[in-house]
Amino acid sequence: MNEVTWRSRWSSEQVRAMLLEQFEAFWRRDPGIERETLAEIQKAAGVPHAVILSGLRRVGKSTLLAQLAHRLGVDAFYYVNFEDDRFLGFRAEDADDLYQLLVEVFGDRKIFLIDEIQNISGWEHFVRRWMDLGLKFYITGSNASLLSRELGTRLTGRYIPIELFPFSFREYLHFQEKPIPEPGRMTTVARAQLNAALTAYLQTGGIPDALKYPELPLLRTLYDDVLYRDIASRYRIEAVTALKELAFYLISNPSSPISFNKLKERLKLGSVNTISSYIGYMENSWLIFTLNLYDFSVKRQQIAPKKIYCMDTGLASSVGFSFSPNTGKLLENLVFLTLRRQTQAIYYFTTPAGYEVDFYLPEKKQLIQVAQHLENPATRERELRALEDALQVLDARSALILSDANEPGFTLRGIPVEIQSCAEWMLTAK
Image (tube, one colour):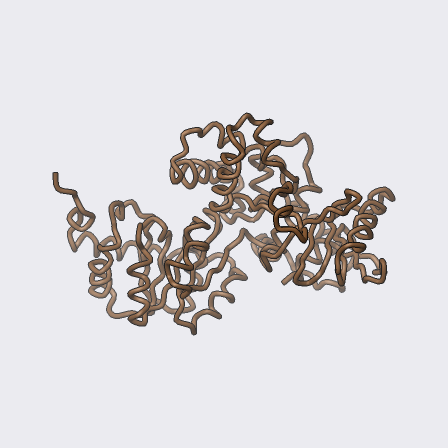
């Protein structure tokens, strides 16, 4: 039996109509609030490399492309969305036919904006070939593995990876049409309002559609889509119940250290390799991040417990389970996300005496502790003791404690220590 190809299923006229429909719907798309990542994308405009924009489903990648499109102008680009079911069966060898039809419909243009390219097997072949012809690509995708680690060989290094996260705290305030105060020049009322906004942000998170339509269970739908479509289906996992149990446990315990061996025993989930693979799939689909222990021995880093952070605190609040609001853990998760926007070189640290420092940034040689409040003397003593112990073994240059209010700085073992309002820090963190 002859295989039915994508090109034989659709007439040229039907494909032209589809391309026009996609373009017009994309151009009419509500661009929303301007994302901070747009400036990073525009910096890459002058280089010939493909710009790869990746991130969790529903995080706003297509909207960000639309914001870029309006900066470029309606006559400057082609737009193709491979998430469209009419592209089912499309293969890399169909790309030249598609290009010809795009030129027929829109004329000769030099920029491609492409959504969800990971749906096309072998896409890198035609992208690389067209780049050699001088075409510029801005590409989105939801799979971190496909669109990061594997790209080095697929595009031979000719790409710029850009990650899109849920709304930052600043973006959240813009979305909610709340004023953004100037740090260091706030009234008591303004500080109280800012802290209240941060508390709300912790619970709702920063997924744009979930904020826009709070009456709908969009975070639950997003979570199910990632588990079933991005993980179970893509990786052909038959033990879906086991995957669900593991994901639920991790989402319910943000900012917590986990041991693969203990997870295997607790959840009765086959082998440690199964646990490791499933967690890797969740990372590749942008559902969670894992954080390694900082240790001078790479082997000890690998075997030590890892800390788990969710891509969005609203997702953790909505999907996970806890007896209380879990504000302290969510706050630490949010600080991690703020740091992760800046760098991937983040670790946690455990001192020889067993005290834990939430984050260590080796590039800045900075220790960071997160505490919801410091009024309790025992809490303050615990945070300082962890920093003091860490300073005995690490060559840190500074330390930062993030809490609910600013306090005067001081030195600890000759190292400057700042205590900052977490809400104000998030407004200025770069």
